[in-house]
Image 1 (cartoon, rainbow, N blue to C red):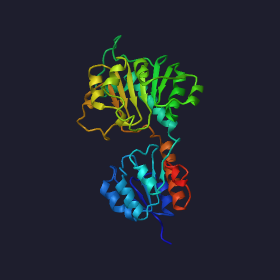
Image 2 (cartoon, rainbow, N blue to C red):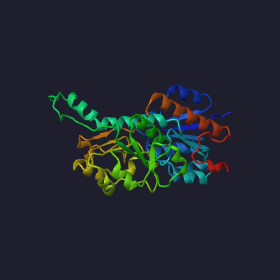
Image 3 (spheres, rainbow, N blue to C red):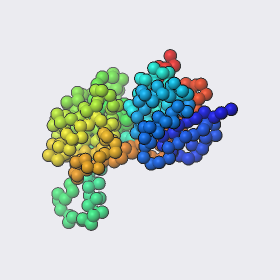
Image 4 (cartoon, rainbow, N blue to C red):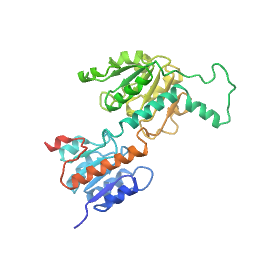
Length: 327
C-alpha cells in the first residue's frame, strides 16, 4: 500500500518526523529560510497533507490546487492561521489544523519578560557593556520604569491576555483590558476591568497586544492611538505585527511621545534591515520567539502530527480551526 505524502515546509524535531515517516512519505524543506511559494506549489499536487508555518502563504490558489488533487488536510505549527485562506479551505472541505492552548503560558512569560526588559532598559544596558561602555554610577544613569503597582492595559483578553492578568496580580498592578465585544463571563476576573480602547491607551503605563489579527485589529495602533498614550508608557506586542503602524511607532519613539516599545512580531517579517526602528535605543525587537520554549514547541509539533494522522485516517482533527466543515 502506498504511503500518503506529507509536504512539510520546515524541518522540526527529527524524532517526531521519524515517527511520522513510519506511516507517511515525507517531502521536507530543510533550509533555514522559508520555502519559496513556487516550491510549495510544485509539490502540492502530490501531497495528501500539508504541514506549514506562519511564514508560508497558503492562499486560495494553493488550496484549490491541492483540493483538485489529493490534499486532505492542512495543519500549522501555530495558533494563528491568518496566513491561510481558511475560508477557501472550508469551501473545499479541507480541515485546517492549528495548536491552541499549549503556548498560552509560554507566550505570556515572554511578553512579561519583554515588558520587564523594556521597563528596566535591560537590553540597552547589556548592549552598552558588550561595546565596552560602562558608565560611572550616577543617580539617573540608565534609569527605567517601575512595574510594581503600575497599570497594565491588555488589548485582547483571550487565553494569553488572561495569563498576563494573572501575572500582574503578583505585581499588584491595576489591569485594564479591551476587546471589541464585552464578554460577561470575564466579569468574574476580579483584577481586570473592561474599558474602551481610548481609555486603556490614556490610562495604562504598559500596553500589551494579544488580539487576533482581523480587519478591525489591523493597524489599530497608529499615530492617533500612540498620541493618546502617556509619555512614560511602553508598548509590547507579541500578537501580530500588522496591528501596529511601525512608521508611526518610530516617530512616537524618536520624539518621546511614548517611552519605549518591545516587539516580538513585525510586518513584514523579517524586519527590513534598513528599517528606522533598528536605529533606536528605546525599542527591543526579537524574531517572533514568544512561544519558543523547547517544551512548548515540541508539544505544538506533536499536536500538528496528531491533526495530520487523524485526517489521513478519516477522523476529525482534534485541534481544528474550521470545525464547521464537520457539520
